[in-house]
Amino acid sequence: MGFFANLCAGLLAMSLALCLVFAQESYPTYSEMDLPKTSFSCWDKVNGAYYADIETDCQMYHVCHRDKNGKTKSTRFLCGNGTVFDQRHLVCQDYRKVKRCQDSTKYYNNVVTLLERLEAKLRSGETEKKILEVENFEFERLN
Image (cartoon, rainbow, N blue to C red; front, side):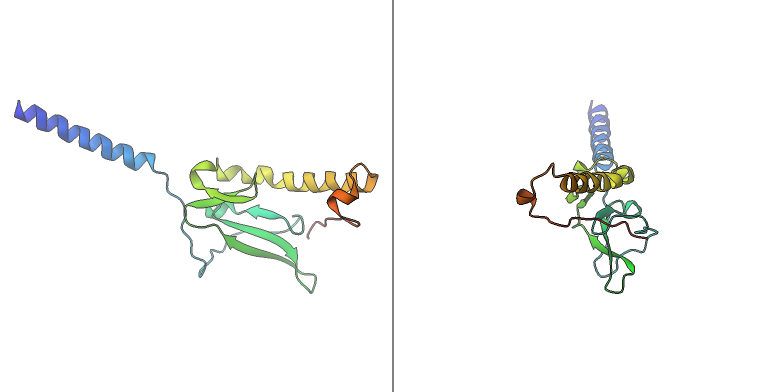
């Protein structure tokens, strides 16, 4: 009986170890001192908007803008270890709460659509300017 008890205990321990290995999803751990280079481009992105970088499994994100010389530029930021950039909500969140980083590009246009609608409402007078305190709201596509 001792052999079977040992065999069962061994199989149980091995099963638990495998479950732990497969249950834990890994997350990226880049360093602020050595930000990764990726192919992300701010071409045709909205000035001042935030964009997840899928090549870093969304741990890095970009803010696209123009520098003082009018040149298109991307400023890169890292989310803390254990978190990734959630493109739908535009915040860093626990990596287990962010579904499919690769789908982030689907939400890039959500920013554009939101800004375009807001601009249209402001121009048409549908939205009270007092609430938003905006007089000349415009967004610009970078190229």
